[in-house]
Length: 148
Image (cartoon, rainbow, N blue to C red):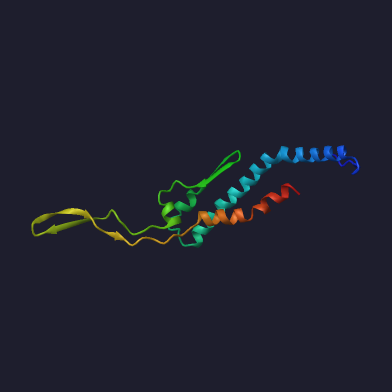
């Protein structure tokens, strides 16, 4: 797009000028949006790791180090393959724990194993949702530099 002067009184010139601007901006939009999504995804990943540490959910560091982002064109996936990640994010309701206990009775001296331990549940310690919300809330700051 050139910095040419146009006459406002000439509707064809104005329309052509606006068409040029729109074509230029829309033409680069998918690539720019992909870059913006990359930036946002990486910030979400970083924020999620920081939130895990801040909410006292890190014991070994396995969950924190497992949070990764896959980058495809216009599609980003932030997540983890750690099985207990959802339990940290959402918490758990009371549940039985696979904790075997040998039960002996007068009728059965050898006893038998039962899983009877009840866990009271755990409080949710969100890390991924708040990271997502924080980054999305600031979406304009990611996009604005490309379309000023």
